[in-house]
Image (cartoon, rainbow, N blue to C red):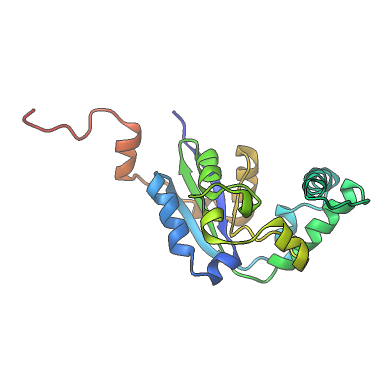
Length: 198
């Protein structure tokens, strides 16, 4: 079975809370392999590529945001493109110039495993045991009140294609390392660990 790679970054709010080790520990404990890591301080140009100035992005994010706001009883007369631009502006304002820990993780189902461990975008609705449920009291309501994007502690890739784009954006190919991990024998191979005199 082929393994896949995913991009995960520990955002500034998680760094401020001293959660770097805890987040890495949770990803390692499940069996994902860390193949690249570095501290980054994103500028608007590079971050703008991760959150693109594009109509499809505005529409996608705007529709999701509008639906979430309606569900919470907030009527927003702006169209989805306007809302998407508003969200992007807040994201860039919130993330530019602040440190993040950028990482590439590898393993079977790496994207879905990371999604389950990290939790959904609204931390208040994330399942107990996920990073977002366990380590923040942030919610869409808090974010709306303070007029900042929801602070999710961690960013993760949402698909294989998105992961490839984000990895290429933040890492040179030589920075992503290939190496064997003993745990891979346990996870992916047969015939290991038998008692010799059984």
